[in-house]
Image (cartoon, rainbow, N blue to C red):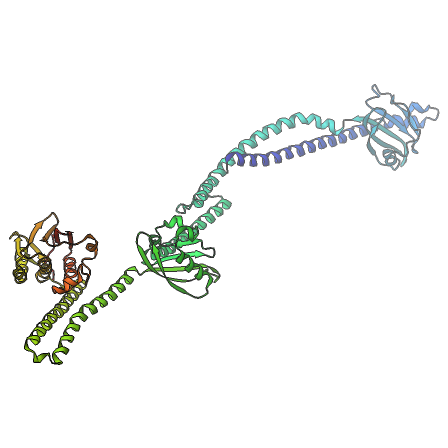
Length: 594
């Protein structure tokens, strides 16, 4: 509340009260003055009449005296009018210059009182003199009876005239009182303004959400109660807001921590809320998405139909949805009706679980089962066919039997190699998941040369020369048997795809953060279309040639998993007709683990 407004309210109230008081006092003073003047005039006239009593009675006793002889003479008859009347009210004489009126005044109020033996008074307006006249009638008693009546009259000032005399003083007094009232109102306004301003500022802070401060409690009882009520209200609001904020933060934390996407829409498909996971799935901003139609946020017909079905159904719904954003994602959606605290239906709640990796793993599993079945079926079928041929009589032909048995032996070796690689791959994956593998400090030169020795027989059969360029001081924390298996697969792969009397180069190099084992050949090379899938299980660039050369199709997959176990990776560079280069990267800084 501003000082000006408070001042004018208080000043107006004081002014009205003071003006009313001054007016009433002025009127009361004028009335009192008029009554006092009336009383004084009555007493004066009565005294004058008593002074005239002896002379008038003496004149009345003289039988021969004329009627006007009983009236004494006044020097100023206009100021004091004398009338002598008989006991019956007949006028005996007058001393006024006013024209004579009625001869009998028995009907006048003051005369009636005097005829009854009492002093009578009456104040009334006289038209002839245009003024109020005070009449006093005094009975003159003789022998217990009214012998004559003396009536004296004089003019009296009216109440308005008395009031005019006080008006000047009343105006002056009123002006002084109003000035004092203004000063007092200003002081009271300032005194009242401080706690009210403090309460106003505190209320503004409360309205803005700042409930930490409190209102100073004044000494005035009524303002003290108001301040205490405001403080109590602020405390209760602060406590409730803290509870609401805590609940909201907990809810937001739960939703934000969920890996599943959560989407809530109203009955008109307007987005009520969505968590961070859902926003990432839809590439949307949660703040901008709230309040907008779902069609504006996510342009996916499958999701639109799923939300519409959930809104139309009273039972939970479930469906798989495919999102085509930067990459294809498969979502498992579960929807249910969204209700408020009163149980009224207000929308739908949809939970979206990203099952892309799960579906990919299922596809990989199906492909793996199919590939394993195909890879195992080929040697088993070949073995079964030749065994049946031998049983049907080929054993009687030694040369044919020997040739069939050699084929069976090769197929058996191939079958054994496939099984061994499957077991090795399974062991590597299991140890990687459990971290159940040991790293020791080893000289990479020893590991590389050991792997090359295992590949020398095949290389010598094909006339391929293996050149090793390794630094004896290259030490790394590795699992030597696993790393040796990886290098054997790379070198054996390079030998098999090299031309006869070709060359394979095995080298160790070092970068700032990694040690790199490079295996290079100058064989037929690999087309770029095959490079992204080269490390998948059972993927073959030339299936017929690989099987003829005895490959299991799992070697490069094993290399990739061994590199990942060591925290590294494997890369390939190849050009058709120019050969291939495989790089096995091992990070530096590893330490011994158990």
